[in-house]
Image (cartoon, rainbow, N blue to C red; front, side, top):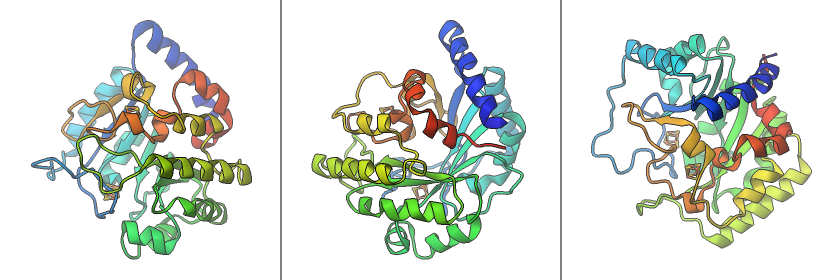
Length: 293
Ligand code: SF4
Ligand code: SF4
């Protein structure tokens, strides 16, 4: 029912955005803290002082209610690790009809929170734990096996892209809804824990095509997205960057998840979905990504 609601509701919200300029989607860091230290993470780089003192719930209530009043109906909650603030997730659940969360999966999220969870797994146990920390793979599976709120969210780079097929099979065997991928997106300020040359990027794209042919229903990266990934340069207008609202934990506006993201080499799933017009060509994947209750 909720999925159907979203499919019907979104064109109206989009019409309202074009005619009245009312933005309907937002992406928000709800904490700057995290319980992991992943090798490819750049969230904590380049800031003199992170806001480790998280904001209390009443601050979030005011922020969320204002967003809702301003027209926001789809919200993506990120961090840091958003599951460190279950209180904020449950608050969002009371206010917004459509919520996505990107989580590392090491903390359980109550079953009453009936929204899509993008849970990070970057390969088989050995590869994933070499990137995300010892024991993380097993903790994620212990917390979420059989939970159809989960779509695995995999970051692809030279170090792990050959693990994609394993991760798709894992999603099928674990009762998850499928797998989405982001190609590792570098920063343009020189801080890049991983490098990704153009040859490696092309190899990743070939692997995406191969695995998509094997598992068209489970790999929720559409052919349209894969084509977009293979374009050399993504500077210029970006629907996700320009038409969604983006806030860090201190409520500063920004253009995208990471400050200084190198749009030229963008591998973000959100960028690859492009615009509502291209979404028409990827309805199978978009329908699966939306959570059904
Ligand atoms: S879980 Fe996310 S925020 Fe935390 S260290 Fe890993 S990549 Fe960074
Ligand atoms: S990094 Fe990608 S998704 Fe973000 S604004 Fe740039 S092109 Fe768009």
